[in-house]
Amino acid sequence: TAKLTHQQDLAGKKILVSAGPTVEAIDPVRFLSNRSSGKMGYAVAQAAADRGAEVTLISGPTALAQPTNLKMIPIRSARELQEQLEENFDANDFVIMAAAVADYHVKEVADQKIKKHGRDVVELELVANPDILAALGQKKTHQRLVGFAAETQNLLANGAKKLAEKNLDMLVLNDVSRSDIGFNAADNEVRLLRPQEEPKLIEKTSKAQIAQEILDELLKLA
Ligand code: CTP
Ligand code: CA
Image (cartoon, rainbow, N blue to C red):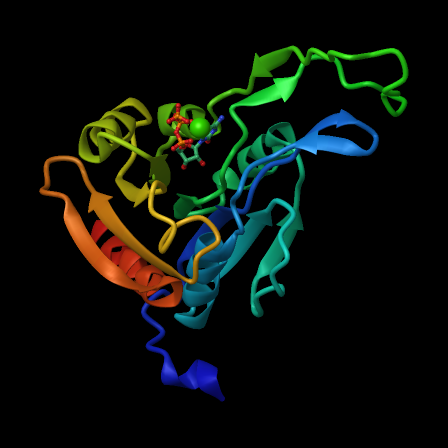
């Protein structure tokens, strides 16, 4: 089978991956979300499983086929994602946070469908979600933590700040101002940032290949 062609260099490692968007309800039929397709996170999860890791994938709603050989936990909101991450955190060696977490949720979710009649303007009050990754960075012990960053400007400066502030071991920096890479594209080009090291550019290639290179760097952190 195809699986046997992969080097099993992640055998014995437990890897927790989050992927896809989170979805924040407005009412029973409407929500706030973002353009994440889940492709990059799924590629990392699949590559890790192919290389022998025991993978748990916590995923927001995506249109992707479920990867094989891993445990899948579906979530919708940032709060649900946080619950699942906290529950699985201690048992894992690596946590790869590729999910595009909504920064805000709707303060009061309507329990019935909001009707348009008589309303020209509707205001939604939004409340900040907890920074899940930063919280994991504060409590990590043996875990290696990998964050993703989506930036449209000042890439390296913003990335370095997130690496430090969230206490990460690695940050995968994505330029989401380009439409040929990043959100929903088949390809990606990223910079890997690690504390005390020069950023490493992974030039434009398939998300599957980027995933392999992220895992290669991860192994060096082990
Ligand atoms: N993240 C998280 N919890 C949040 C927001 C983000 O865990 N509430 C994680 C993401 O999964 C990602 C990393 O933090 O791994 C960076 O996300 P990003 O949106 O790029 O950065 P933010 O810290 O949210 O800052 P901003 O959106 O203002 O750039
Ligand atoms: Ca954000």
